[in-house]
Length: 373
Image 1: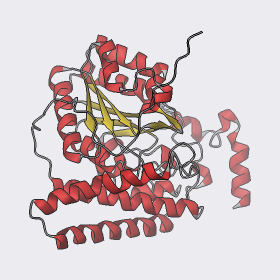
Image 2: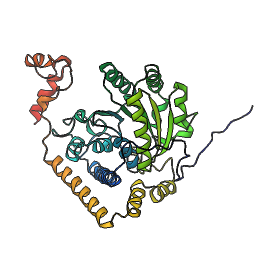
Image 3: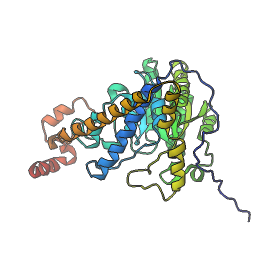
Image 4: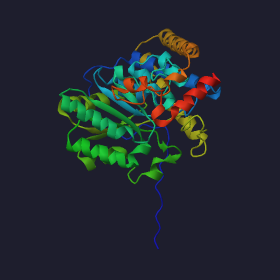
């Protein structure tokens, strides 16, 4: 009987094959501002890792160190009225969208002043006022939601675009096919942006996907698909800007595959060395670090090193202030345990007649917490 072998592809630190069109952004990217955001995200995540290992952050914690250009480039292409939905690797998205470092760090600490009032933690950041409709913890769970958000915008006659970020591991879920199929049938203004960092947890894309070049899957739904170098913030911005503009103006859905790399493991609990070599990680860190690449462009353009040093110092000061803010923020009161659970506008009247959470028996839990405190 004939046998077949899986094709293997090196994850060497190289630019992806050029398959995206040469886009000219409608608005030029402020590269210095982009580097400022990238530095803030990098330093914030490094501090998050330290705080998590000190047991000051609970639950799961997924870092995107190494993916800053992908995050900042994509978010910079959004307009204020656009909507953003992401996977659970969400710290950088909240910061890039304008959520304060204090509110994000307080959320990681589970504190009252967090952007989700201490309810979401690392995996479920959100900022509806800025159009960020959340990090979603269920793999591919955000795709149908993003499609629904785009449909709602069309029904309301709003000229907005929806950016739905997902990881490469989500493209093999049923929700991927369902969401893209409906987006294509109804011509919805949503850009499904796949951050392909090569590994779904510890399984490489080549091992898990019959078609590992994810952007090609867009053809099955008769929508545009492009791949871009995710370590080049300007390339990401140009491609995202073009596709989001087309979605906004022409209701054209699309797939954007952003080739990037995480320098940490899947989560803080994963060393990231069981399924990839230390040499591979070091090669990406040394040759394709997105901040180093963008900084080199600024230096070539005449920006002084002193200016870049100042930006780095300001970013570090913002992170330090965020930790201090989170430490000082109070824990949510046990009396508020059942708040934000129900969306019924009359839920306040219901709660006025009973203890918080009574419908599901949480009243006893609240009482125990009150006694313990």
